[in-house]
Length: 396
Image (cartoon, rainbow, N blue to C red):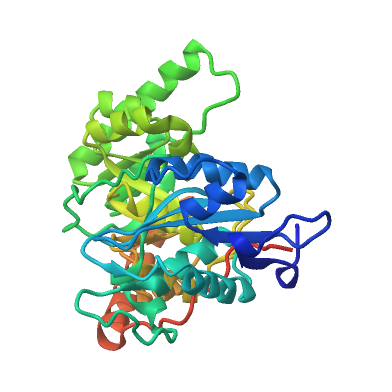
């Protein structure tokens, strides 16, 4: 993949694909794209995905098609990492109709090392303005700290976004991730009140495995119900809904694979939904489903699963907590009380523990909970220092 300094951003009218040229994010309107392609200019917003895909096939590294500046401006993003409609927050004005402005802001983000999809998110934020703001406000860099400006990203070709639907009055606190009903019982007996049952599906599951999984979920539901713990079942949302689990956690690849109909069916169950996120565009996409929480990770390097992501660190975690508009759970590499306290200092609503629970949760959980409470006191007294987010995916 190209190095950051080899990537560039250009308006559609200024771009000509040439062999060996730097990967280019091309920006323009749908009309610009259709004219460049030699297509009939339709003026139909729904034609943007097809036009953007055609530009990608013609050699563009990524495409942003800017559509309008109405009550909820939209930008179609087509890139290696993410595709969908970036939507400004409802009620916000936007100068995204100014292609030159969007192009310049995207170029500035690319220069900071962000992949094209994340650069598009930052450009959208920079071009969005609060109601009553001047038509051309002082851009500066303060937009990156304003939660009201963070867009949503659709999961498909239609600009579909779910309104808030989940009661988040209960904090997630210490969040144990375990692989069996026996382990669920251990951690809730130790005082953990948020638990994820994570049993990964083998490549070729047989009937006995499915029966085992059903039994594990049933016993976990019973254990959490009797202790007033909140249970999230990883991946297996249909069984979770059938067996009375209150919540489910899914990664973004799994949610993407469900398609529009599958996601609609998942939401119709009423399950509380937890979603993983590792980048700016994944954060924006998670927001589009009004989740119970959004996980930010990996905060520290982790051996639990192989991932391409650069560790978020406490700086990105604090940014997530400020910007997400939903409770944020810190996950990844949390092994000791000191890390729990540091995550809570950033404003995390919950802190995930996997290996850090140890063989005897009753012995370690009190220390972890004390660290969580201490970190929250620090956050309430001092707040969290929030800097620019750093890129979480290498472009080299």
